[in-house]
Amino acid sequence: IALFEAKDRGRDCHAYYDSQLNERAQRRSALREALERALSERALYVHYQPQLSAKASEVECVEALVRWESDKFGAVSPEEFIPLAEESGLINELGEFVLNQALADVQELNRRCETDIRLSVNISAQQMLDSKIVSKIREALDAANFSPEALTLELTETVLIQEFDRIASELRTLRDMGIDIAIDDFGTGYSSLSYLNRLPISELKIDRSFVRDIDQNKYNRKLIASIIALGKGHEVRLVAEGVETSSQAILLRELGCHLLQGFHFARPMSIDKLIDFVGYGDHSDV
Ligand code: C2E
Ligand code: MG
Ligand code: MG
Ligand code: MG
Image 1 (cartoon, rainbow, N blue to C red):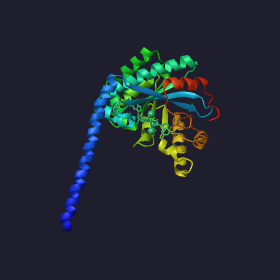
Image 2: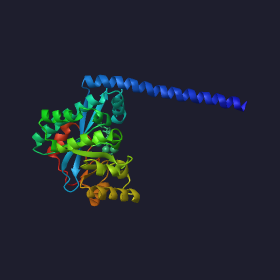
Image 3: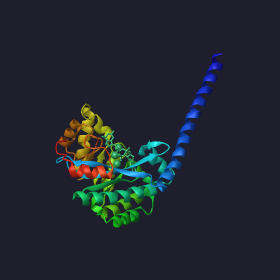
Image 4: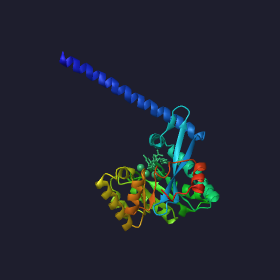
């Protein structure tokens, strides 16, 4: 009887597991379809999160972050739809849309506020594998009349796992054009350290998982201090992401981070809000 029961339970378990898998697969394919429509109907938009200088608390750069408000699914996180866009090949079109929109918006911001704020854009692995990526970026910069020196491309380490040599040479071309290359979520990947010698990196973004408990966790504090020392040795810019409290900001400033980004200073926002934030905001007390 016991055996019998176990077998039954096993079958229930499988059924439960299968139906969950099924639900997830269904959501993914429905999302993928909706995303394709969103892209052609221009229902995606771009928000911007400021990066402030640690010293003067002035906005030096903004990171473009894509947003999707679906009629059917509500707000969908890029953590969920970017991987879908990568699998289905939509990412190239999505990436071009984000880059063009962001270049135009930041031009407008700098014109309106009489500033020289830089732009940082996330580039996914699939985009880097596009053989036309360099010419596409060059054309987008030309069309927007945007200085390559004012653009940073953020890549995660997963980008670099495939076709290392080809991607390395494209990154060198981009770097020679004056574009900055950042490693995003630094410290979470596999072989971070060797990349610094082998690639034209100009910035490290310290992952927010290290920033999160920097107050309580001595180990993470030491880890951030070593990332900063490493970055300084290679003369790269150090950006901390996910700064949520003033004590984190103070610590990161003391440790020698150059730029701070996080909810403590500002959440990602529309270009109109950003123009207000930069134009009227006095950020010197944060
Ligand atoms: P990321 O590039 O590491 O971007 C930082 C993420 O952290 C953003 O999430 C941002 O809203 C969030 N964040 C910023 N400050 C804080 C903070 O203080 N606390 C917490 N808890 N979170 C904070 P978001 O916008 O949901 O984007 C998630 C990821 O999706 C990005 O991570 C990036 O990998 C990807 N992504 C977003 N937009 C694009 C895009 O246009 N193209 C590509 N390829 N990927 C994108
Ligand atoms: Mg990023
Ligand atoms: Mg990041
Ligand atoms: Mg991150």
